[in-house]
Length: 393
Image: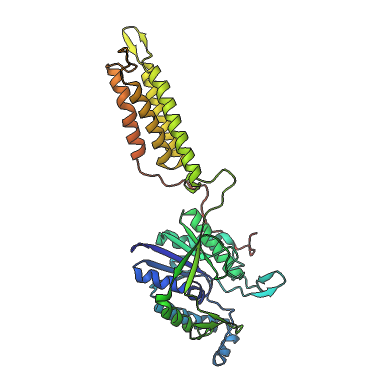
């Protein structure tokens, strides 16, 4: 990973950043990357493991304050210097008053994890999805990350806050065209995962986990949550690149498979040869107006070349197809400019002929040389004016 890489992690509660991605965060920091961690809630409805801290369960605000300190200690161990709570400061959409997203809580139902029935109207799940996504987008706009990391579609294990955080992070990634990586659990069957070996920073990950004493009981190379089930501290952290889903046939060219790209390039080459040959044959066409000869074949041919190459560049959003088409045009023009055995030539040594041989090269250099234009947004994340209190399906 590059020294100057900027990586944004979006997590639901304090301790999630360490359990799920603590080793990767420490590894990135050590490599010189700029790491930003966003925590959506303060875990007000979390459980408490130590008997000496059970009094925190009597006040959600007291537990939240304690978990803030735990999170600060854990992030310091991992080396993170840029941490933000969603809804506050630069993690809030411009023009909106700061707010606090509260832990939605969770219970196990017939279909798995679900939000508690007494849902706080200020909780993350109760907030309008557009508001949550726009707050994540505010961080993206400020940090300009190269990569955004959060959970998979299931939120790791189904916690409603994890699912909401992941959807919001992925939405912001799509709008700002930033690669999105989902955290995958150790037993994930997902294909094409990126496995990060964090054995070299495992001591720091272990210490950061121990800092979350209300939530995690660390014992050597193992840990347990409030359920008391012992599990190993992962020395391998897994991530999966998640690409934007498009309607059938609507995926941008850059996301197409290699065979599609190769076939498209060959088609571009063939089209270029055909167009170049036909227009070369017709480029000498002209008519006379009074004493002026108008080389309309040359004029129309140059316009067609320019429109064809520019159109391919804009439509496909890449130089590849325009370049192969330009190559085909240049091959056709160059071949047909050669003298035949009988001494005739399709491109005579006249002003029109010189222009015809030079124009395709100039047009190709201009079209292929202009900077890549930013993708046009078909929608924008905007902070809503009200809280609707429902999780979109």
